[in-house]
Length: 137
Picture 1 (cartoon, rainbow, N blue to C red):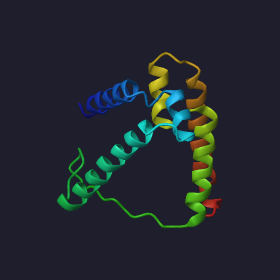
Picture 2: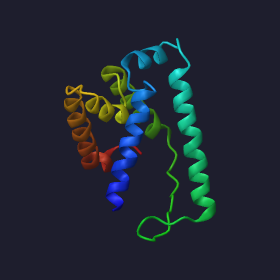
Picture 3: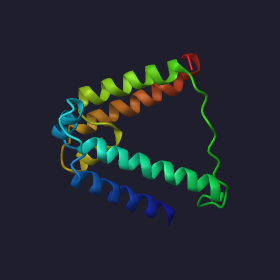
Picture 4: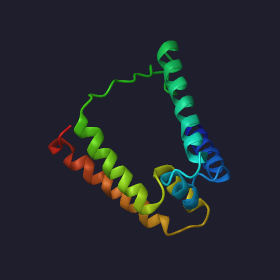
């Protein structure tokens, strides 16, 4: 049952992203050229909702689907971690024209070439998991 909930939430998220045109290469292009507030507004709204949701989970001691308390552990702060990760994320976003969420939305919209990008992203995540202990963070 809980997998169905995840699937329905993912489909709803994809529909919202598609209808809001946040998976549009042209909207992303406008954002990187500071020509439109559209993407910044969408991401700012998502950030606002995420911060409020995280605060609510922390203050109300919510439990997950299995009844276990949700524990949000703070990450260690380091310049290298965010600088190197941000550069790779930004380069990938700029080269492909989509970040991880819209990649799946674009496949759902019939742009099958994005499957190559998804495979590359999964491969990159797998490689990171193998070498993460050797990286400076």
